[in-house]
Image (cartoon, rainbow, N blue to C red; front, side, top):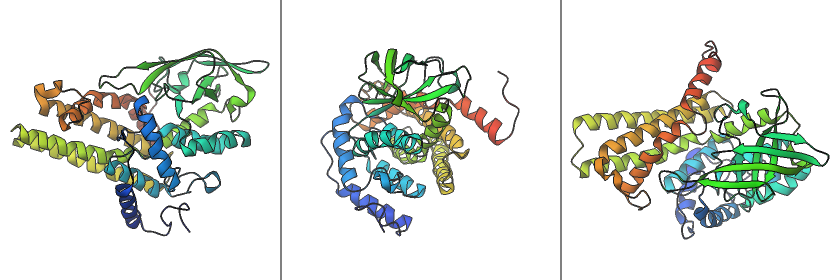
Length: 388
């Protein structure tokens, strides 16, 4: 039996799988303009990213976690994680974007109607449709229970009014996964919807980042009319669905350790080139290197459990964010005045500058470090809840 018709055999050991993944990725033709843009493509990344995605799909290397009946591989979490890590090592994205396949697909498979599955899953699998996640708002980021965007029932469906922010790839998206308020209760008053991003009343404004990219966007929803069948699951089920998507989002956090190791190597080389690798800096770099290995092994323990709702993923989110931040701070220390290099220049120094510019953001996006500490304290250690 195989993972997919064209992919590696499910009876292979993890080591054998890694070797096959590496050989496949090394031999695969790379579209012009393809780069390792991470989980979210910019508008310029869509064309090469989609071509790369289709090549992966043709060879059975996308939707590894989806059930076979929907074109997936039904692969164990460890296999999924190994492929993500090998893609990071090869310097290529593992799919067009994270939202459609990793977040929306599993949601539709579990909560969607048969019509929704038939309409949306195959274009997602093939990379034909880009999706964006419409969760965070100006006043509700880490605390999604504070969402204010409203969905009011109408005779023909639903009317949406509100604003979202930090929506990845919204300026390139065909559809949005929208969390909106349908009732007064903080959790049970939330519902999940599918929003065509070209619908009347939807406007998108890209946000320019410090590193020169525009991966995030503001999205305004003004009297957007949706049909009855735009809702996913039942009214009031939005919180349950949102929590599921966040668990999937954090599954591949540990694969970022590979990129961190590559960045660390560039830091060491930059310090040597500048004659700055004294015992004090070397000791700091060694501590950071050890933390990266701890992150890598914590991730391995989490995926071995196979439970994406495990509290270990909150630990991973915290560890990944703060290690990214500290790598960025060290890049600042090593480069000194060379931080003025253009972050889009394509050099090793430019890579370090980009890491410096986005490092602090890692402790905010996807759930702040403060929120992660609250989750660990309250849900894992059983400490009293923070006064609110």
